[in-house]
Length: 185
Image 1 (cartoon, rainbow, N blue to C red):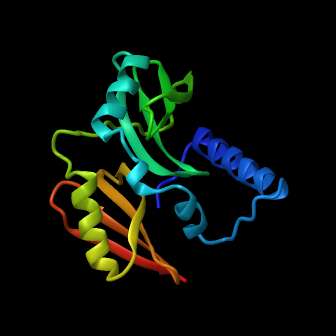
Image 2 (cartoon, rainbow, N blue to C red):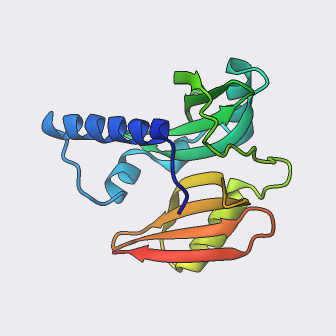
């Protein structure tokens, strides 16, 4: 599994802290991702990946895209797009219903991080990746998607969730081959 940057780990910890705070405030959260998915509905995704990328590129001119994640955040879906240019790493969160950038951040490019740009013109669509993942999982619905370079390969990671389990399916984003499929009960 690829090492995520310190920035990605901090963003993850902030999300966990936010969810914990929400839970303490009276919102009951289970450990299963189906709870978030029940609150955030995939039909509320109104902004396409292409539109989200355009918003990111408007915010960060000349930035190359290194990772795109679409996942539930509370009662909505959110894109998180990571990119880089010659000097900086950039991250933006974009509301998947409204297209509004809800937060963005830039930091000095860590030369130790192996940043490689995605070729979005060659990758399969999220819709195609979802169909492949749902077929592989045999039951459930795609509810979290990540497009990234993993060890030199462009991959889609799709979490397929049903009431009993989550299946994480990794797909080659160029040729549609299933790389791996792991079930988490």
